[in-house]
Amino acid sequence: MSEDDVTRVVDFTNQILRLAGLDLKAVADKIEDSVKVDIRGDDIALLLGHNAELLDALEYLATRLLARGSDEEQRIVFDSNNYRSRRERELQLMAEKAAEKVRVSRAPFSFDPMSPNERRIIHLALANDSAVRTESQGNGENRKVTIYPA
Image 1: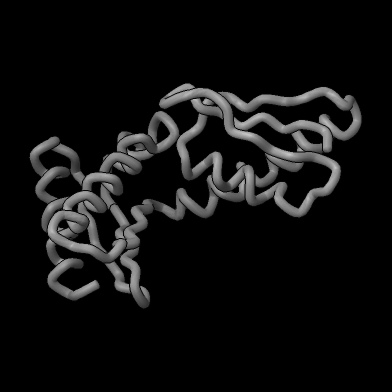
Image 2: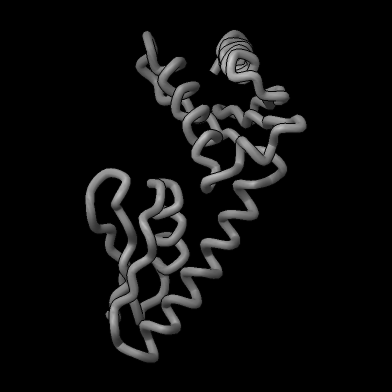
């Protein structure tokens, strides 16, 4: 990913944030072949509300922006106040607790619908647990992870 691509992502994101009237600013760090965009400002709560759907949407739009006219996959991660790492740890703990319930009860457990990234975290958290298996079910926004006894 070129420096021009990084600049395009930051400018694009800041323009959207400005047009939305949000007191937020995007800054980016290029890390090898990926870009981490950190969003800071007074309206963080609006950005991270509803399971950070707005943060996910900005990440999606920026990824689509760079995908136009490019054959290579662009890895862009949007974050704010370390939300992603905190949420990942929270999901890992939820997965471990749910897996323990499944091991004890021998009954399946289904999470509420989650984003593709959050479902992936649940699957990875339990991938090496031989006592349970995970499966995604449903369509679109209703897609969720179910844990079954192995």
